[in-house]
Image 1 (cartoon, rainbow, N blue to C red):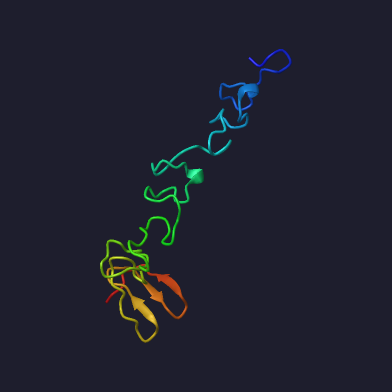
Image 2 (cartoon, rainbow, N blue to C red; image 1 turned 120 degrees about the horizontal axis):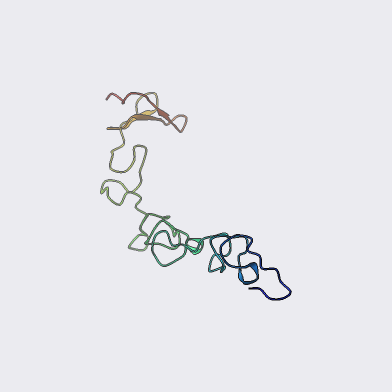
Amino acid sequence: MCGCDEIDLDSDRDGVYNCHDECPRDPYKSDAGVCGCGVPDMDSDGDGVVDCNDGCPNDPNKWEQGECGCGFPEPDTEGASCDRCPNDPAKAEPGFCGCGISDGAKDDAGKITCPRQQHVVNLNFARMVSLVEPVTY
């Protein structure tokens, strides 16, 4: 109950009267919490940092993007580069065909055919052309 001079009103219908509700327009919160009203105080990746303060909310190993970005480990040694293909010992970058797949040879028309893939990358126009049928090589 709010008191003599206040109306017992619950605008967001969360069971807490507006006079006691820090978030009277947020039906999921009555306390602003860490992230404030209208933003859930959740930790999607379970790293102990709520998503609103986590620069990498889906990466449990990082709170900030760092040099390599979310989802990629930072280099172990100073001066080393980021490894965007940590499970591919032959590549540190995805290249045209992706991690785990060697980049095909460039033909006279400037196209690379990726092994085991169903697309061709046109280097002359820097765009990917999707095909309906698998690439024959």
